[in-house]
Length: 271
Ligand SMILES: [Fe+2]
Image (cartoon, rainbow, N blue to C red; front, side, top):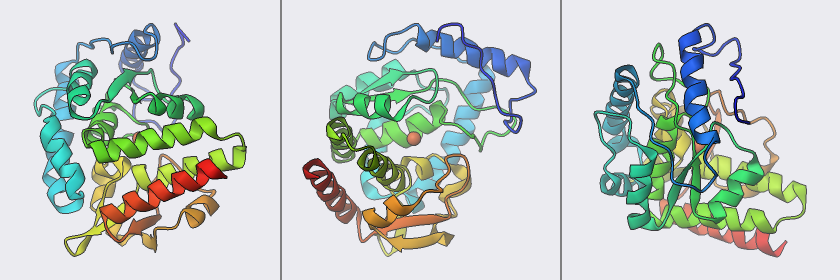
């Protein structure tokens, strides 16, 4: 993939910005030249990129008190991502090793589902390093470094949440039936990316997709909320990664979500 040129869709905020595309290619080139699992390369972020990080991180951190589950808030407090600059994956990775035994691995962009789960089984989270387009700091159609770090790295600082990611990776590696692999992908999506849990009398989220999305975090309580049900999650065939989620699944508590997910992973392993 070395030397590949990024092609953004026409509705992407950076579509008609050649400087942004060049920057994205440069950052992608850094991680494509590294082996998956190697220590992430250092990116020299620009003042504009640092500014986007600071703006989004400050806005989301202020909302996490009202919308994130306690398990995530405690983990984020321990990871202590800096507020003034885009954190280097390598620094966050070193801290995660101490907190939960996880690493971050740099990737140029989205990886295949198989590669993703295989990395999780190895306690390595595939992370992109580019920053969203500065014209719309509160929106990204793709998982940029802000999503990876505020959504996933903060979550992975919790050994309990990290264990769920690892288990998902282990189970994926044993599945031979593509329908069950597909089910696992959907359940991951509706839980570790977009899952809700009742806590302190309100719905809160433990999902990386919501925790890192300024547009969605304040609106998930207005979605079509359904009880945690992995079979129902599996019936969804219209989930879409770049638009708002209209249907979300909620557990009675974070403990309940964790227990149900672990049970689901065990059942899938025996299937
Ligand atoms: Fe994600």
